[in-house]
Image (tube, rainbow, N blue to C red):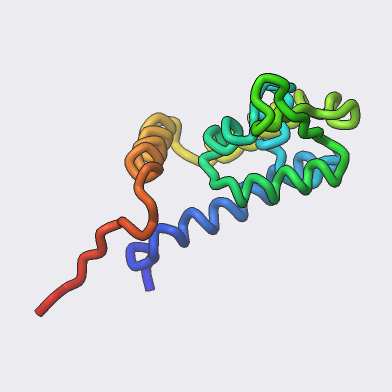
Length: 154
């Protein structure tokens, strides 16, 4: 079987596993064990972003986000505070435990990205990002159950 026969998701799954493994290896000296990017975004918007805004930035659903936030809160990295202007919202902020690691996460993500791009011919970098961005843009608003499926009908 050639890779041309693979489902596209298989490529993403493999690359995600490789990427997360490399990033986790880069971050092993920190107390942060997972959810690096969500913690980084919370740190960069410290106390100013609500859960819905973070879900939008991460392109994830509310249920998945709550799981992430529960883990980060349980690890002592974030706090959720009721928004005084809108009591239905929770504002997210980092704790003193997380504060020293936000720049380290930023650096780790950049170095991991640079490592993966170093594996590609430089002429492919812009196209790679463009293709992924276009796929995200064109699919993010379409619920999975509304994707058209085409069958070979005889």
